[in-house]
Length: 598
Ligand code: F6R
Image (cartoon, rainbow, N blue to C red; front, top):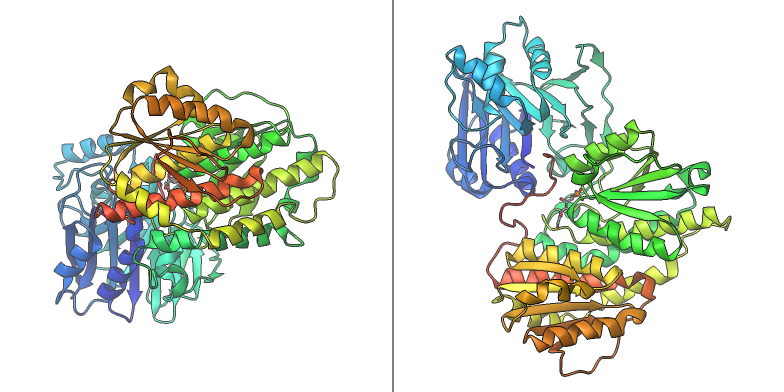
């Protein structure tokens, strides 16, 4: 959450910072601000609201600036307001900072500073950083930054300006990403590579506890003991087209339309002669007894979908929310592997869960969409999803790519356990069929359904087996984008309580893609209809009953991977409903992409 940008060089710092903030806006958008050196002093402009509000107030301002830092916020401590927007200056205006993360010991630090007479101007945890730096007695700025990292508890990516050190930026990070971009005209700092596309050819992913010191000509890196360390630059492999909205009205729409390609590219990766599965040692997989797949939100739903696929192959899989896994009792299970699923690779709970698995010497595999991510750095083995950059807050194409990669992994494990040849992706042809069918999907019914749902107060999604996992994801998507109260349930569980909420005002979307469960699911439909609710059936099977108000027909493919098809119209349903309600699907209320705080 929150996006950080920094620039020092020959271009206009104001322009570079504002452009960068626009690219980082999906990380948080309740307030934004910049601080630049202007005639040797700090000039701060910040504003509640989206980045456009900041751009508006910056017009005609900050004309001759070449160094500065900026921030777009997702509030944790203190409400979204001008006062709580970053950057923050220290009390005597000698230090300016922007921060992403949470300072867990800020109350103790703030109390100590207040006792020394320091007055605070915001309700945030972050302001304490600027005040601590001002109070530091260390002889050099570098030492002040080092001392700061010893005082702070929590997660942080911080960019710092010191008055008197014009055109220099300091940065530090722990459990929160920060990247340095090297350009012909200067250097950038950013929370992720998306903000650096078309700006730099090379970027460096800051290591944990690394301290960076940049000016317009050079970048120096130090470890926590202030020993100089080498900087590893990676080539920028994203283009402007990858991260722009193009002709689409919203990123979410663009990304839904890219679902078929995300699946296709992920299969290609998994089918390559030296595919990523093959890097996992056979010794680990051949006697494997238990797998735990861990993730948050949509990534967890992908895990759940894959667990059904694995079960059909007699592989024992448990799924855990990362936020729960972190704190649950550790069971010493022999021959276990943990798989972590994450689009961003930066989700704080998932990172912490992985660290716990590592502490217990459990081999860790990550399925992520961002090569430069923290999870990739930490994991033993990496299975990349090839969805391309996902900008909309709601995950769509990454979800479909995650399922694809996990199906492939389960097949690979199955083959190793059964001593079968596993050089190529078993599902290759079946998934190619899915890609084909999704490319030709007819959304006419979805448009009609969105018209109905836009005025609904309550929607339920139900299913059995793997269809329950799809229901979970469909429900999450609808609620986060359209703000309609939505819940998902196992179809067989309705009668154990939730039927009490079913009435004429309710719409129930029933997902039924599994032949052997179809008749049982129909029973649930009769129970629902008897209470007067509207019933929408999503299926590839023929169904003819007065109890059904609408059928969303799915193209047919192998039942084992029908989840790839069933979720597609549900993603579009969430999108269309939000748009009909006049909401911005790319920036849902109270949410942000990349949840880098606990
Ligand atoms: C929902 C959504 C979130 C994320 C979750 C995990 O559309 O996007 O539920 O899936 O925050 O994020 P990653 O996958 O980046 O770990």
